[in-house]
Image: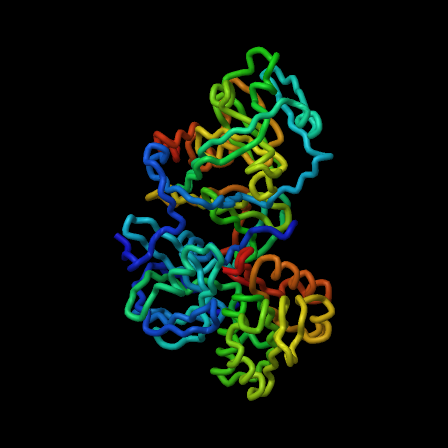
Length: 201
Length: 250
Length: 88
């Protein structure tokens, strides 16, 4: 066991009701910025979001088209695999149910793609029925680039690496293809309440 | 390259804090006694690991500020806003405490007298730390390598090692020291007063045709800007060595 | 490349030493995507993510990814084509 450093503790612990804190997490008042690469700088004029169905059909929205869709303001808790959790975060975005409307059976898995090359994979069931959004507002402000702006995926019931920053598209498939962190040993599903951080957990 | 290529295992040692020195209002030097220390060169760093009672661990790298001094290794820690480790090392850690340390690490950003010069050192904020080790090594070895040190800080009270550098700059033949302040300067300030830029380097740094070995250290944006400027002035990229401390400076 | 919140390979010096058994920051490495050759100490490194990501300073390709999934520390080899064991 490593030497205990007298008087050292993790900073920024915030008290919270235990039933809201998944196992192994601590609550912070901060919003840490964790990045696997350079922050893409994407202007609204060039931004687009493409949905690709199982048969390869593409549907693309420009920024203005996305903004014209009905959006919602939601308050959710978020949990990062690096052990911090942040409660009652407020987001604004378009539900994936809105984007999927009228598209019929979309396929069982999704691969999320982001500007800059980041990817993550999820079951379709976990991004629909009120569980996923394309989020462009945080705390009443436009989402900042270091937090994933112009828009990120928001899937708060799973570890936050699934809420891909700088989201650019969603591809449906009937097979599960691993994304960035998943291919480096992180869990394919990522339920914080079951502490599914790593493959095999 | 330097003789750091000896393969060896890198293990965590228990180092004891034997002295602390307040450098500025936001920075402290910590002298660590590391039993079994295998030695180090100016520019190298150590990893420091802290463990909380609940098992939580945090690890950071800190440049060594002094040349080899038997088993004593001195690091200088600058307070990082919202930091987790630096507030502990600056405000809580005391003489007699022990922390885990491993090193020395670094074969790329190192200088020893055999490497010669002239030596151009450019440091932003806490980037001064490994460069100070190089200055102290040069002085301590009685080397005649010409050295120009250019430090950049937000304000005069944040300049690391100010008095010592000023004194050495005055006393040591072949060592010149310049400081520039980027945010505020006191009345009577005789140093420079803006961010390091091409014009400042043209005026005060060794020219490319003097073929200096350049070491640039500090926050990432500082290092990128200075390294780009040096290359634009004709310095060969292989003669410009960089070490980035991240956006906030370490 | 934009001025970014990255550090450089010096911060992985300890890990590289554990992996290779020698000081590696002054050893040259080659990006398998664009062919750029840089010292390991000058590669760009993004820390604090769920792992440490080393990227090519020229084209941003992921060279290797360090994950610490206790108790296993894994160096995931990505687009790092080669690294020299001797320094210049």
